[in-house]
Image 1 (cartoon, helix red, strand yellow):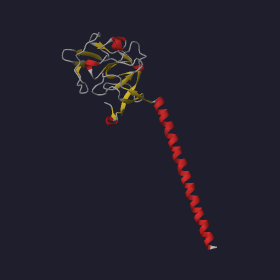
Image 2 (cartoon, one colour):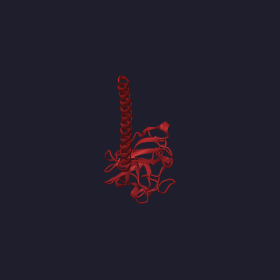
Image 3 (tube, one colour):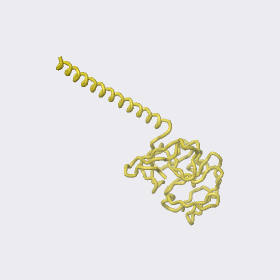
Image 4 (cartoon, one colour):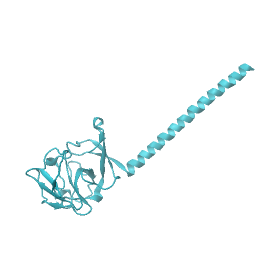
Length: 202
C-alpha cells in the first residue's frame, strides 16, 4: 500500500511538472505573439525604417545606413534630421527616384536665412550658426537668392555635406527651396545599421 501511494505521488508530481511546462510554453507564446503585434502596429503607424541614399548627410549619415524615423514628438525644429517624401513637387535626390530624401532642419516658419557663400557661414535671423555637424563649409550656390524668409508651414533644410547636397539652396527641392511640413515623414531617431554605429542620430 505504501509503495502504491509513493507511485501515485511520483506520477502526480510528473503530471504537475508537465502541466507547468505546458503552461509556461503557452505563457511565453502569448507574450511573443503580443510583442510581434505591438511591433507591427508601431512600425505601421509611428515608426519606419529608411535607407540613407547618397552622400548628402555625411559625416552624420552615410549611404546605405538604416535609420528609424518617427512621426511623433512634435514639430520639426532646428537641428532635427528629417525624412521628406518625394511627393512634394519637384523634390529631387541622388539615385533612386522613389526614395525619400534626408536633410537637417536649419530654420522654421518666420525665420530668415542668409548664407555667406565665400566664408561658408549660415545665418538665421542674423546670427551665425555653430555647425559642428557639417562636413564642409557652405560654399556651394544654387539658384535661390538670399536672404530668404521661411513661410508658414514650411522648413528650410540643408545637407550636412554642404558641397554635395541638393537642398533648400535649390528650387529643385521644392517651392523656392522650402519643404512643406506636410511632406515630412518623420524625424530620424535611431541608426540601426551598421551595428557598430547603432545609436541615436544627432
